[in-house]
Length: 229
Image 1 (tube, rainbow, N blue to C red):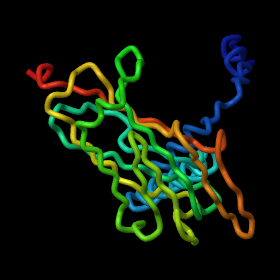
Image 2: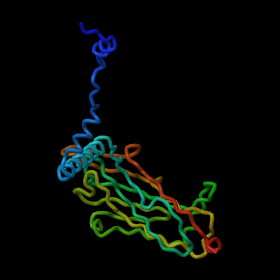
Image 3: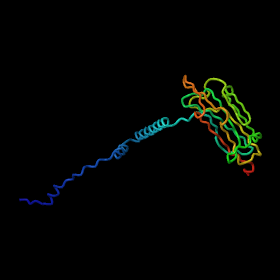
């Protein structure tokens, strides 16, 4: 009669009850990607790139807040040297969903000390400050200049600035005197007179002014000949 080896019985009775470990989703994706041909890989990554661009554009146009309508200077800051010639453009920015059909604009320019005190306007008599209307608007806008103020109004009908657009309606050319003192700032703003904008959206007409208009300032640091040495 055959003898029973207890060691064999233990080996036969021992079984692996641990569950078989399945590859993770990421591992399966990597294996799938490796199985693709070079051409299919290129198409796959190209589709991913296009998808990311589309999602980015959707988020941009969905979440981006439109700029408010108003008047602004360009550039809005800088350094001007004595004897130099410079130009500042004045822009009108239309609302997001309406066209600008007319406006009244009042600009003031002045010299300001570093402590914020305004210098006497007579000091600007030696400055050459020449506002000019661009050719696109020469027949549609009226310009006035008195003392240290500039007025600009529209004198016709029709769309001046289409919805969501910005147009340059005035160029202010400035020549800084050779003997100008340093440590001062040439400042431009819309702090005088009336600033309004008439806008149309379909058959709806609205007059914007006050807090409904964004009025941005500009200031330029003046450097004298002595400071340039």
